[in-house]
Amino acid sequence: MTTDTNKFVIPIGPQHPALKEPANFEFWVDGEIVTGASVRLGYVHRGIEKGAEARTWTQNLYLMERICGICSHVHATAYTLGVEKLAGVAAPPRANAIRQLMGELERIHSHMLWLGVAAHEGGFDSLFMYSWRDRETVMDLLEKISGNKVHYSANLLGGVKFDITPELAAEIHKGLDFLEERNKFYLKVITTDETFIGRTRGIGTMTTEKAEFLGAIGPTARASGIARDIRVDAPYLIYDQFPVKVMTHTSGDLHGRFIVRINETFESIRVIREILDHLPGGELTTRVPRRIPAGEAVSRVEAPRGELLYFVASNGSEKPERVKVRTPSLCNWSTVLSLAIGLKLADMPMLLSGIDPCFSCNDRSVGLKSANQDPQIWSWEKLRQYGIEYYR
Amino acid sequence: MIQQTLNSSWQGILSKVKNWARINSPWAIHFNSGSCNGCDIQILATLTPRYDVERFGIKLQGSPRHADVLICTGPVTMQARDALLRTYEQMPEPKFVIAVGSCGLSGGVFHGCYNIVGGINELLPVDVFVPGCPPRPEGIIYGVAVLLEALKTGKHPEPVQWSGGGFDGMLHTGSGLEDHHG
Image (cartoon, rainbow over all chains, first blue to last red; front, side, top):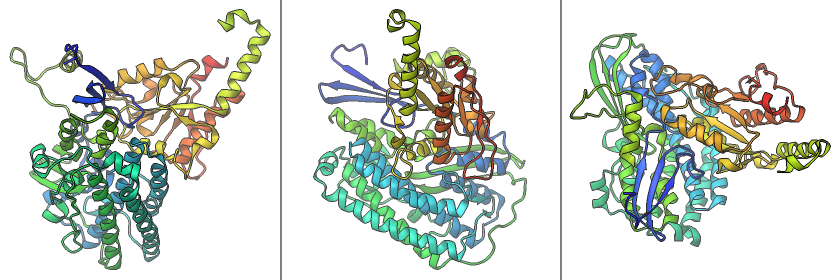
């Protein structure tokens, strides 16, 4: 790699001004053209999955929520659904409706956040400031419901904590009207602005076959024409009663990813209105035993970035035996690294943010096996040295 | 060089001017040492029109070599530890650290996980702690304001008791300030 003298390597990170999270990228360039790319993750690995085994079922709810600060509610929902499946209880319909409502509000907040960050990477700071200003509206709504802006902790095992009162519903309606108006404006901007189209159209084009081959998921895959959405394919909560339409686009480039995400925002707004108008009545919580019966469960939900999968195993005690999380960001990295080749270096920040990367949820540790030593035991120094040598 | 050639009275004036400039326009650098992004999006939100810290002269800066204040989040993972130390060492003197978020204070919800150091003050001298999971943007701005006030008076920041306001109480230590304003 670096020993080849014909290649010029540009390292970016782990502390870098473009993205707010630590990750290290290496781009090999020939003049302005990128000839290769590699990513080094792992700066945010905290050991959450192992930590979950030392906490009780209820404590884990708060730990899982803090896997990611942008899509926190959806993590807690996936975990709760898995545990409820194990315990053999079902949350009341009203609780499920409120969970879905929070999830869709969170999707609006996440997509607007992404729109701003992606525009910022493209040097379009006015759009960044506009979309973040308007995003505060949905943050305010979430705060009014739950009392916190980022980690709402709306979920309980067997229900939700917060109710939607008629006054609150009226305020949400008002906020949604404003957001719909603004998002129409953004859709107009990204489809008509010459500069913006120049930076996005035809950049990082991924065909449907390539997207399937690279295992792209979420809006990144939907922008390449793959109609795949867990909310439709395997409805959870009450998505069967309040269905969403899968938003796809055929272009497969960065521009398509913008359009898909903004259209999803409209779809979320529509579903939230529908839920508010037909909110089922009844209890908010149901009783869940403290000890969860032994067994294994898998739950899948659609996070703003794609499919999120939780595997929960119980041995019948107060603590889980194993919690495995498969997050969407990790699945999309291969698309960035393979699409980068042949593009200009200046397109890299936008291509990177095009998949809406979220590093805090994709850093894993993997057990390594060496032929001539004990496969299980690695000291920190040895592991670190191995990491340095590996990426050299 | 300047310090060697100027006499003490000029040096006093020069340091006053530098302090005045620093208080009126502190440049900050943001480092995520393994947080969940919650605090980071709140820090970013302070730059956007609703809060807009740039009107106070505070600017988020990309390079550590241009920064006065390190705004740090996260429980410091073992991987990010060296990068955090390197970033801090690249900053010119005098430098100040603001730890944002519960996990920056003590490891927070990740307490006991195997891959974290647990708290930024295990590694760096922290001047202001902003608690909350995550703190509100107002809280972060207030944290910076407290630091600037302390620079102005040269006194250690006092712990602020929570009075039922919009954000949680602030706890301050003056460990870093001591070296710069004896």
